[in-house]
Image (cartoon, rainbow, N blue to C red; front, side, top):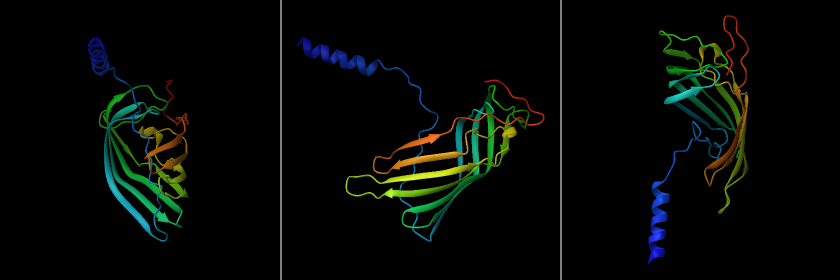
Length: 194
């Protein structure tokens, strides 16, 4: 009898004695390993609204609206796809600012900024197709073109290369992203230490 009570008490303590944990800002984004059919183009157009987005290069935080989120996927063969993705215009409603590497130029009395989004050119290769219980494996590699003006505060400050190894069946992935880079000093702006 005392074993049952002790077990129940232990389960109750474990259930009700939880502590908050910190997590990354966004989950790791992975893509399907499947590629577009050869000689076909997949075009996607849309918009995004993201809250509490952080830009470590400028130190800005706020609500980001992306207008004209574009994606073009061109099927080259049964295992290769070429991708071009990006945003026509980003609008940030600033809710907070901390010291960053670049002193941003803000509008509307320091409460907003906007600029072009960054574009990515990538190639996705399906290495192993899905078969039975084995997941498909693919590799996506590309370059992010720095089309955003860092002085506007919307550049993410990461490097220009990215790669991802995708596993389709378990919907998880292994990805790499470069550390924020130090900004080139622009005339009229100064570097703020972290």
